[in-house]
Length: 292
Ligand code: PEP
Ligand code: MN
Image (cartoon, rainbow, N blue to C red; front, side):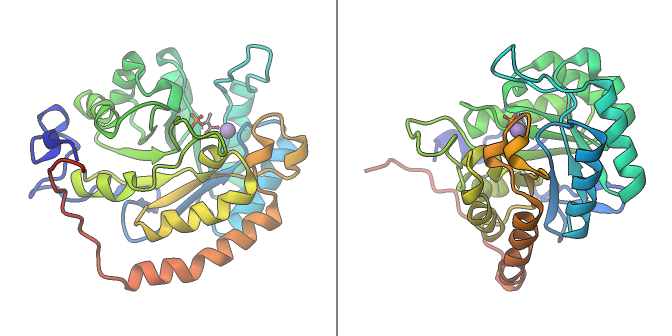
């Protein structure tokens, strides 16, 4: 562990664990993120159509999800790829909330869109590519909504917590951290899920931590087992991609679960969540020292 972590959190003091503040519970309607529940946020990578979104919303709600995910503004690595439906997508998300009671999480990519997206979203998602967009982070300080801050693709935990601190300093303490895998030399998976990040963050920060197994794995077959791992290491929930017909998805189809796969995953998670509840709370000691 980096020696700087030994109790010296001046660069991210607002989000660091302290005697006064050991846990933040982010309240979204009647959903508590960072409390005793394991909160599932699920839905398509991108909002594509009314039929796609409403069917997915019903399916994930039926399987136990509390929050519907879906991008209306998509950061794509090709300028020729589908960029999202924009405002039309936001309206469809709002309709899905009315019909199912699910809360909505959707990505905000620029500070100009913060107030528009805050009108529709219950949680503002900051994507991995935006973790260091400080103008956006500052604008989210006054948005009046909780922010789910994804880890930058090549960011250390300290850099990530500094970004969370920027949002908190700008006036918004409701920040949720989301580990979504980092870029390493490994190419067998899309990204490398840093599962140790969960207990380390739990030791140094009071913020809720959720795991996105979909963008970490890049393939749907690994999503259930990574979700299980997330539950066991003490994450507060998941952000999972689900699509009615992943083969036809306009983005991230390979890593999206279909409805039956999502239902099975949710069922398989139950015994692990029960064990996690029954187990003694794991309190890692962050030992400072050299590595042999
Ligand atoms: C997403 O959630 O669809 C997304 C674009 O994620 P990330 O920012 O982690 O790549
Ligand atoms: Mn995606």
